[in-house]
Image (cartoon, rainbow, N blue to C red; front, side, top):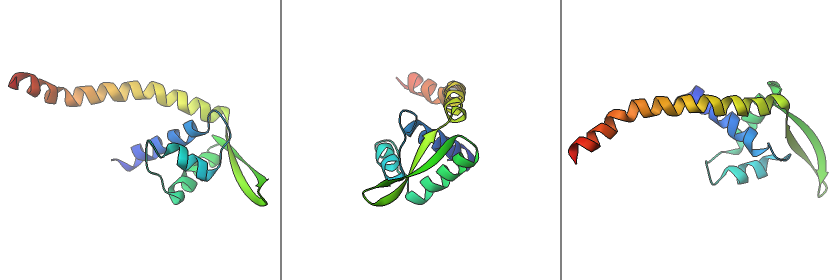
Length: 110
């Protein structure tokens, strides 16, 4: 998969994982696991990129005697999800065009 496309997809997936409530690294990975494998190092790179872009904020809170970072989506992050959803419709259309010949081949074989 194209690196830039994958990066954009991961960004939106992480934003979607925290869109309903603040979350922390391990929980984000756990929530995403049924859909995709994500290493801790990749997640924290994505989180830092999203924070720098203003799409999420970070707060630190104590949990069981340890400090834990919680991530909160911003309005810019929510807007990025909405833009992605509208862009995705176009990507699906392009995918259908690219795979149209495959479907035509299946139909002509029958």
